[in-house]
Image (cartoon, rainbow, N blue to C red; front, side, top):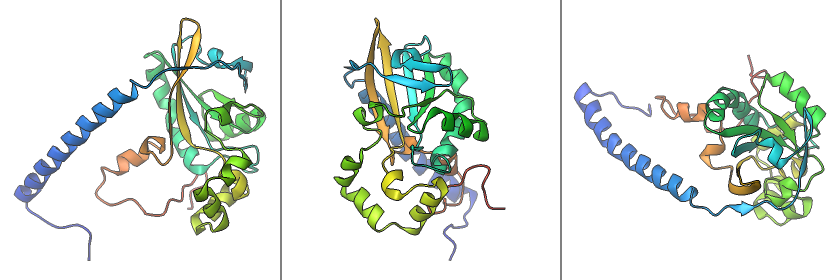
Length: 245
């Protein structure tokens, strides 16, 4: 049986009008969530972090590149990944560059973090054709201080992580092969967005959101929700240069 129904234009319009009411409620809720998000307290960043960038060492304040807001996506690419970054994160990375010019003109600098060493990030960035600043948090406390990565000890304390490592579904085993890492190492990276503000010479942490929040998903997933057929249930992702022919 098909998962769709055939109807008249009048039936479609009636159903579309009902959906419009729900979409309006969803939009109103989204506005309330945004307002509450911006009411979160700003927490001063008192530790001095040094990051490896393509242009040498930089502090967190220097990553703002003269703007007052910094939005960073943490790509799952740990130092133990022998092949490359998470394919799903790479899908999102493909889609970030086009947004940078618009964010820059709205006082927001957009970058990406990963824990792999900077030389590996630069090589992967070239392979993917990315232009955004790609910053390494390798051998810093930053990702652990802000909860965008787990230490081995922290990972052992999370039942969901322990279960996935002990009894991984097939797609997760495939994912481990795609990145070239043992699951106990690979799953310590947290795909997430993290935001900071710079005001009067001080830097503040303002927001973090992690998967499985829909915001931490490739932008094309938002478009697929508007297509007539449902998305595949399998969570498998492919890098853009590795899709099966």
